[in-house]
Image (cartoon, rainbow, N blue to C red; front, side, top):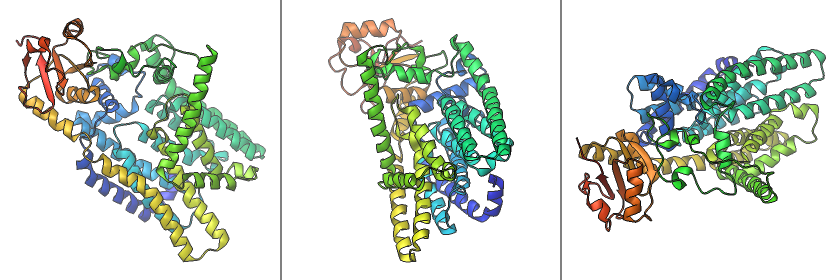
Length: 523
């Protein structure tokens, strides 16, 4: 059954759930419209470069282009950039919710359980939408649409499904470079599963054609972007994020370069910080097979990330592990029928997704899609278990309530905690703009992120932090060498600085906790 057929049959329910999500999202928008993070600044900056026609800077190996492309129409209409980011997140969340509902029809659920589950998805996806400016929600959206196609029993009957999967896979790669290895691995594994679980010759022929067509479409879409970034960086690459983040996982890791390498010029003339393309800084390379110590370090990282991945799944719901174990038991013994069940497909999908991140550092947003599958599997288990036991309504209600509360706690509490994030620094930037007009290069003593946010809001370039350990001579030499025009001081670190006493404090102590010194003569 296709997504359009499902929607037509369940149109009132879909419209009600999607309408409620939209209404709640718009109500929450005023509390999240100032949200900002370093990644978000980069995506917005890249979108602006495209609009200006600065394609040399815009083509970027670290940040996937799709998020910036989605921002472009709204930025063209002169909508404030942070509002643009949040509106796009809500729109992507809308389609993510739709995709999750469509995918749910691959699982055995009663009409009542499915309806309850749909409403559970609303706060979960609102939490995803309101959790910073990130492409990970777009990854979830596309992945769910992709899974709704490749999970289908129709996959072995219609050749067009391979083309659809390949196209979605291409967009996954354009969202994050991780989409390339994830799709290739997942698509090949799932074609193998379909092939071995369908003994009929004609179906196997269709599966083979689907695999071939899917790979061709995927490589055409991804190959275009690979050619562009490879030309820019002078070597064949699917992206620079993987090698950069793997370099940071080395035993010699000293922290992100902007915190450990001193002041750094922005990555391009139109960038506000080096974070717009952090790979311009040489972080070095390492090989786990280079030495025994390196190999042990690599194994320890894998082990730690396995534990962390499990923890990040349990953080969503205390029932996550029980649901996962129950899903595994449903797949035993492993037969051709269980190998093509949505439960088995879900477990393999989560396993592939998590495995790809193990050599790096696993963050919560990387595994959000696991939370969606936990919900799907949880309600599927309730349906299968209580249907087999012929449980009465009271017991069913108790279990449904426990499941509901376990799924709602994390997203709801996080939404409350994240409310008004970024508002304080936005108000400070407005106050700063009213007090003085900063243009040129700036550095700060500490507080890289907040100063980067001020640079974004006020349009100056930010070179990073010097720390509070430099004496006056070292500070003067550093700032002069990097041609810093303004020095931002957080706290009272400048109280005993004879060097800074020679320059005008343009904030005139009007902004609490912040002082800015102009190091060049004003024209």
